[in-house]
Amino acid sequence: DPVALTDPHSAGDAELAFEGALRPKTLDEFVGQRRVRGQLQLLLRAAELQDRTPDHILLAGPPGLGKTTLAMIVAYEGGRPLRMSSGPAIQHAGDLAAILSSLVSGEVLFIDEIHRMARSAEEMLYLAMEDFRIDIMVGKGAGATSVPLELAPFTLVGATTRAGLLPNPLRDRFGFTAHLEFYDEAELELVLARAARLLGLDIDGEAVAEIAGRCRGTPRIANRLLRRVRDYALVHGARPDVTSVKAALELYDVDPLGLDRLDRAVMTTMLERFGGGPVGLSTLAVSVGEEAETIEAVVEPFLVRIGLITRTPRGRVATPAAWRHFGLAGPGAEPS
Ligand code: ATP
Image (cartoon, rainbow, N blue to C red):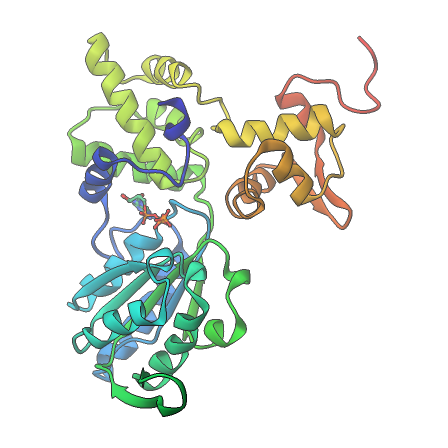
């Protein structure tokens, strides 16, 4: 499916099994994000020396950059059990109370998409994070009383694509916020080489570099493209060399910059309907039929990073490079 191939959010069942097999287990195996790795290392080591649970950690950044992987590493490195949940699964304070009250001492609780948790649960979480305690309401109406419940000490690892959406009291209770960045091509080559080794795939450096340039700065997409290249080589009885890579990725409609369907829709809408901008985020979102949140958290950061759009106070503006990439004449261009 050409759409799913470069969509950094989505992952089917086969995809998840594949991701699991390739997931680094330790900080040393984790490629790139040097700053974040150093910061986490210090935080984990300090906790170990003081024989306490590590501080709560917030991981912020676009999808597919390794937030879930880092949460697993935090648990694995400390030899701690891990509980996984997500914001959308916590729709009532009771959902969170059930999770928190069943944690064992030292457990790592991972909440993905923490910005999507119910408001009432958020408030319960403040106290839990700070004092390892929650207040449970018993009874209804005038007779209702709150009963305090002690929790086992735990480490919360929250992940969000939108750190800006978290209320301040929640953000302030994390001991450390890691901002994950898109990976550069050299790092992606390391991710790909590692994955190829684990898959027993004999692929040369040139082919790896070709894939690295097309995976949207995102390890999840790198691994996925590698899998399609492996399929292509298998079916065609070919070596997974740069020729196979180009043919496979062309077949799946991955362009040389690695732009996906939504990236391209946003760009062509900006260029063709809005003359390159400036155009506001919500107008753009409505025009391509996508949520503004997705455009802002997933699409825009990458397009800004590769220099196709800039953000100005009046809205988003396409750069000359964008006009060139889409083979269109920009404003003020000489008629040919
Ligand atoms: P989401 O927020 O959408 O769940 P994520 O940021 O949690 O995404 P992960 O699920 O951790 O992303 O990573 C996706 C895949 O990319 C993993 O299976 C892992 O194999 C690979 N990966 C991520 N980061 C790295 C890395 N630094 N080194 C090697 N592989 C990585």
